[in-house]
Image 1 (cartoon, rainbow, N blue to C red):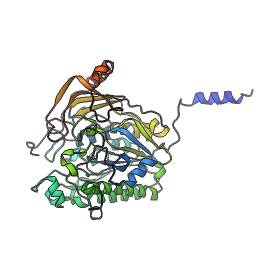
Image 2 (cartoon, rainbow, N blue to C red):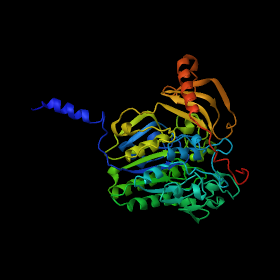
Image 3 (cartoon, rainbow, N blue to C red):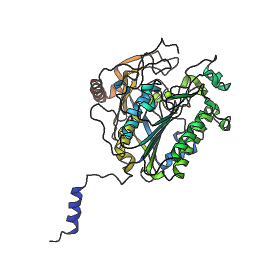
Image 4 (cartoon, rainbow, N blue to C red):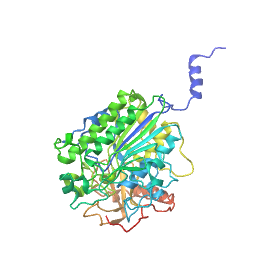
Length: 469
Ligand code: MG
């Protein structure tokens, strides 16, 4: 017997998943470009009026630019833990109110039991490389090459550490004194240069990335993690960028990073990898405002690095994948926590089931333009939950200023402060009295989250000596 055409179509539809994702390469390549302390307002495509960022602007126009994208912590080490593991750093002991981040005398680091994105992709046949700032532990058990990366080239912690010169970061940077910072440059697990010549560090990271990309074999998927040390103070840039930006020294640094993005995109195009490579660009936390003209801009957001107002954690978030990502400005919530589950799913992997994850799979937003599955964002300062965003509303259980003069002024709020970020992006007006239902909802969400966190050994508080910086 013959089926009428509509019945055949209906029968086929029953066999298919409800909403199949568009065809994409079985194992796309991934590039993460992650800056250090770049603010929400530092790029032209996020509203900066003086800094020129044509490559990032193009990347945003060709892909998705997210307006409400969050790092998972307002400072380096915990934020980097989150992007590479898909888990809040409080779950792995990678945050601390006592030390904030790892230091050159730290004995701890990302525990071997944590599964990085590199490890997960390696298990799926990916070639992996980390370039740039690591800051998840500089001792052998914690280095990139112990966490799923085939190779590493970079400075293993912040570029202001190992300070041996006299003077503040602004004076030393403006004097061009990179020798004031005895930071090592490593290849794999070996130190190859010390002090690292930071004047050329952004350029050398870009060149290393381009070399890696141009050497790829077409049938081997890869993951490149390119984490710039800049624009964390002390600022450095190479000679061709010195004095070029209308936004001064800081603008020079951002414009060199933008150039480096252009180098990555050009290498992908030259190698014919555009259509099967997803490039993601973001920052680990907001701008370090205490450094004034050597710090970045949070744009319209309140405050900066170190705090849980949006200026500390809302960052640029740009995704580009030619022919696959639906170009758009996305105004939904996303987070660096979502990178691990999203990339792993795109590669055909499954989330491990032996531990809680804090990320969401953003594939349908990226590929089909559907709303983001993320409705909530927790805001941790060190190991304490300070705030929670649900939809457009954000409740502050406590507030404390960004790193600088106000950093010690912690205030608890009961009832919590409540802001509507859609109407009040600068978090100025407490509207909690008008919305007891929303506060109750957020309290319940935060309580449920807190109950999911198990105590673990702290990695940041294991030091060889007392904190000296
Ligand atoms: Mg940082």
